[in-house]
Amino acid sequence: MNISGLIRNLVGDLTASDSKVLELKVGQIVKGVVLQLLSDQEALLNIGGVQVRAKLETPLKQGDVTMLQVQLNRAVVKL
Image (cartoon, rainbow, N blue to C red; front, side, top):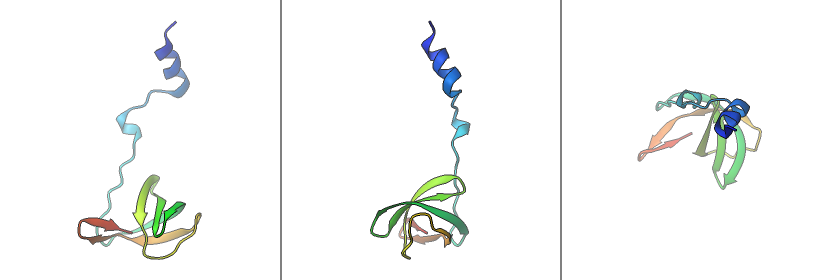
């Protein structure tokens, strides 16, 4: 029995093209959804179908949909 073929049939072939890439530019405005609050001012966001861990400057709640501006601060991208 070919186990790898069976698993491939169940879950499909995964390729590098299945992963999404998010390119952010300083000053860009993006729409984000708060998926999970991680700690004080940190959250897991969904931006364009990509999960992003971000430090927030404004208090948000899980499920909030908001517009975010990309900022650069000492080589750390801020949303």
